[in-house]
Amino acid sequence: MTVLLTGLIPHFKAFHVAMLLVWCGGLFALPLMLARHDPAIGQADYTRIRSATHYAYTYFITPAAVLAIASGTALIFLREVFVTWMFAKLVFVAGLVTFHVWVGYVLVAVAEREGRHNAPRPGLPLTLLLVPVIAILFLVLVKPELLEIPVPGWLSEPRGNQLPFDVPRR
Ligand code: HEM
Image 1 (tube, helix red, strand yellow):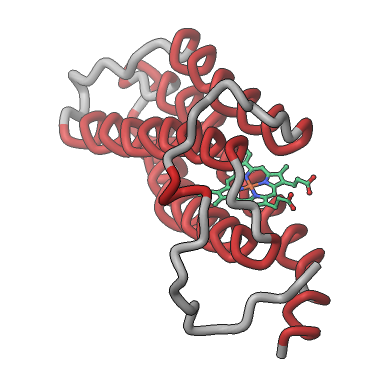
Image 2 (cartoon, rainbow, N blue to C red; image 1 turned 135 degrees about the vertical axis):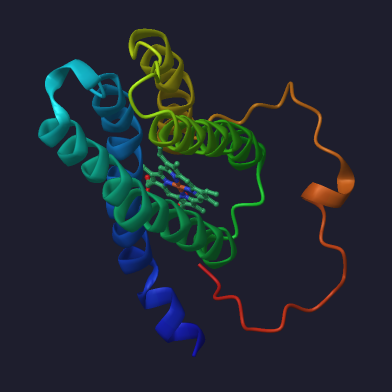
């Protein structure tokens, strides 16, 4: 079982990266699509673009976010990365999740106020989104030690409890 899980680490990683590409790509695309929700473009076009944003968010971007987080969580245990850069990464992931929820809120608001909605201009949100995305990629690829950030003992030391499954050794 342990050998099998160790062998699957590259597969988990590939899946993780694939899912976060869909997730982050969607988070960049949706504010641009929402900005196109202009009733002046005509009813048929308006309906088409509204259902495109709705389906993209519900059937692709949200499931990809859940799978990226689930595979990332599995990788924490498989790779045993209980280290400061990973905790810092999770703080920025929380920023991405907040952005995701905000996009969902705007989507619903635009749908409910058909004809008199005003979707925000995408410039500022997309610039803000770059912050967690770049920070996460920097942390995960550079893996800085971040010794200057104090980490409480309960996060960095074993608690003496047994996980309900085997954790492979590197
Ligand atoms: C709760 C969400 C997430 C968790 C728990 C998580 C966790 C992890 C873990 C444990 C690894 C393996 C690290 C290693 O082998 O040293 C990993 C790899 C990676 N993660 Fe995440 N991750 C999450 C979300 C994200 C997001 C949102 C991004 C990008 C925006 C991202 C980008 C990457 C990349 C590029 C790798 C491959 C790094 C490498 O192998 O060199 N992750 N992630």
